Image (tube, rainbow, N blue to C red):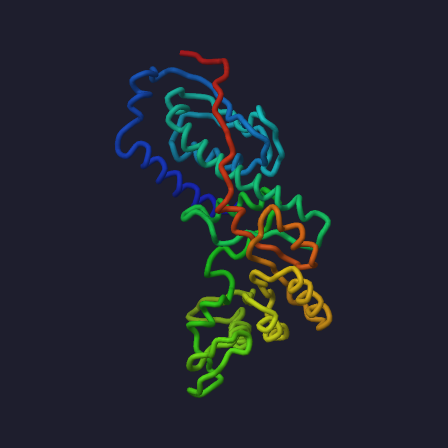
Amino acid sequence: MNDQLENDLRQLVRLAISEDLDVAVDWTTVAMIDADRRGACQIVSRAHGIAAGVALVPWIIDEFDADLDVEVLVRESETFSPGTPLVRLSGSARDLLTSERVTLNLLSRLCGIATMTRRYVDLIAGTSARLYDTRKTTPGMRRLEKYAVRCGGGHNHRTGLFDGFLIKDNHLALGRSQQTSGQPTSDPTTSKPGVGNRLTAAEAAQRAVAMRGGLMNQLVAPSIVEIEVDGLGQFEQVLNTGIDIILLDNFSLDDLLTAVAARDAAGVSVELEASGNINIDTIATVAATGVDRISSGALTHQATSLDLGMDWTEGFTT
């Protein structure tokens, strides 16, 4: 955990509190529960899962300015079964009720992502492949969701556009070559003719490598350069450009095997990342091709929230 994660969580909780309370109060709770009523409850899982976000609950409660004590009962990344208590909360009964839904929503989301990630990680155990997430995250929750991926045993791709070069097809389509002088070119990896000074994959890779780690307007450029290629032709263009990672987008299994063999034969240290059509049914066969990395947006955009509930325990006092 770090300061950025805490800051993101606190901002998100403030927004969630505003959604629930606006500038008012929890009227139902105020009407039904005496101000001096005390109580305790546990956040309990209704399903098998992986813990993610339990260590963040004290920050959530703190944003409510709640009169509650928090006891975390499981470790992050720990496997649990239905009926397992994850967190114990005790104190003001009003505060327990008012903070319940926001706390459950966030924990359910993060545990769901961690649980989905662990399923994928288990399927590629014994291979050389590592599982990575993507930027296909819920707006405002990226660091939190990437934290949940780590809790599930996955790895984080770049956080955003600021901390890594990732050259994609749209950059090639919109970029212009600096190596030609106004002559129409044809892209050798596609049957479509190039238009104007079309930027090739090789030149794009070289341009980013030249900028890697350098200074621009007092900003330090990222140290990692990755490029997405959509076929073996582009792959051959960029293999020896000095980039760090080649993303093999929607490659067939045969083409993945060919790319891995070509990289190994060339003796270059570039890592190969498979992406596209990665799911529970395909990930094991993709990992078996020998790629170093597999990225999947499904870890975040297809994960379902884990079923958690708040069970009231004995010990209510007035």
